[in-house]
Image 1 (tube, rainbow, N blue to C red):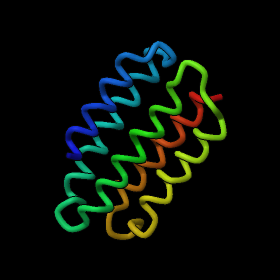
Image 2: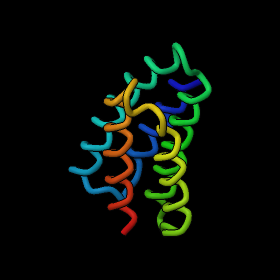
Image 3: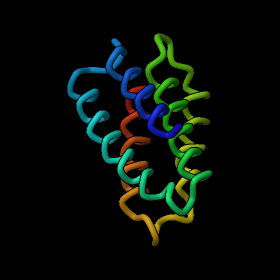
Image 4: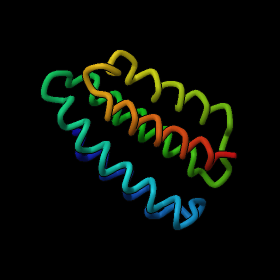
Amino acid sequence: MIDDTIKKIEAQLQSSEAIPAERRRELLELLAKLKAEVATLSQTHGDEARSIAGFTQVSAHEATRETPNPELLDLSLQGLRSSVEGFEKTHPKLVQVVNSISNTLSNLGI
C-alpha cells in the first residue's frame, strides 16, 4: 500500500506542468529517500508510515493543482509535519526528509 502511494506521488510529480524541472528532480530525489525511510518505519510503526505517505500524497496534490488553494496546501503540509512528530530521536533522517519535502512543496504553492 505504501509503495502504491509513493508510485502515485511519483506519477503526479512527473505529470505536473506546475513544477519546474529542477524542483521536480529535487522532489523525486526526496521522494526516493522518503520511500526508504518509510519502509524502515513501517516495520515497527505501520500506521504512522501509511499516514506519512498519505499526507505526502495529499500535500503533493495540493501543491501541484492547476490553481492551488493556499489554505488547503497549508493544512495538508501541517498534517505532513505532524505525522512525523515524535520520530526526531528514533528516525531523524525521516523527519529531515519530510521537512525538506514540506518546504519544497510549500514554496511551489506560492
